[in-house]
Image (tube, rainbow, N blue to C red; front, side, top):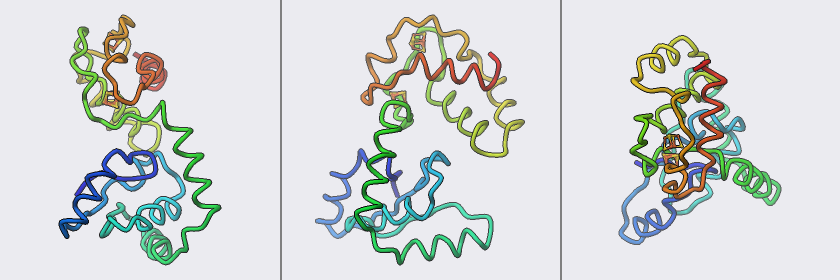
Length: 173
Ligand code: SF4
Ligand code: SF4
């Protein structure tokens, strides 16, 4: 079971190897933690990969179950491929994959967790929950001194300093 979606495709080689060894792969986080809004497209993209056995989207409404089942039968066409490419481009330098390579931060900021909580704050109806956890963190995005050390270690070249400013915008500190 491994995170896989339109934006997080860093494990393609691993999936290929698993397929050769006849090991099944369950794709988790198909909607990239809620960043991807088109569930049909996201699920269809994953199931179109012959190295993936199945996908486990979170569902809390009957409508979502129906929508996801329909997505499994869609033909992944050129138009959908184009849309996926546009999404990849859009998120390429702004989506944290939670790998933690940017850590440790000399200011003690938990960079990936800050982005996770911002995702919960912005995309889910969990503002209070996210604020409570963010407040409990020892250091916050506003403690960033913009030294740039984290950005030199991020394999995805994310603009972490700018993204942390976005965290401050959401939580206020
Ligand atoms: S730029 Fe900010 S978040 Fe990144 S290592 Fe420096 S202080 Fe930490
Ligand atoms: S290295 Fe980049 S992608 Fe990985 S956790 Fe840090 S910010 Fe996110």
